[in-house]
Image (cartoon, one colour):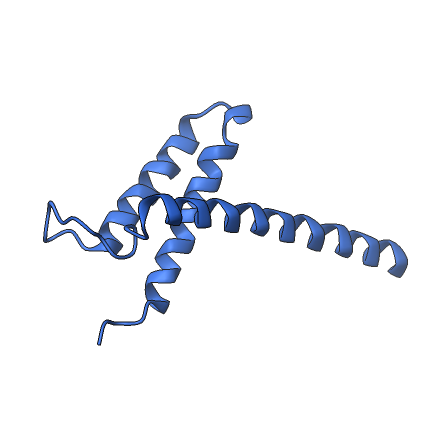
Amino acid sequence: MSPDELTGATRRAQSAILGALDELRDLLGTKCSQYGGSALIPQVTIWPELTPEMALKARFTDKLARLATMAEGDKEDALLDAVGYGVLLLALRHLEPEA
């Protein structure tokens, strides 16, 4: 591949990555608005021993299992959900503790 072709391929790859991140940001923003941020800060605690991290890991694992058993053409929503749960797990690390 020539340097010009590589640059074009890099631009296309970056554009695809940024498009996927935009889609994921929109999805997570919408869900946060709908559910009030309860994935990170639960509003109702049915099982007090279940931490937000444990709950997110369970949902993440469920999505991965679902992806493994789904037909190829049906995976986009489940893939977005799985990646979203991964981002939420990372977000927990950035959550400011209450003062």
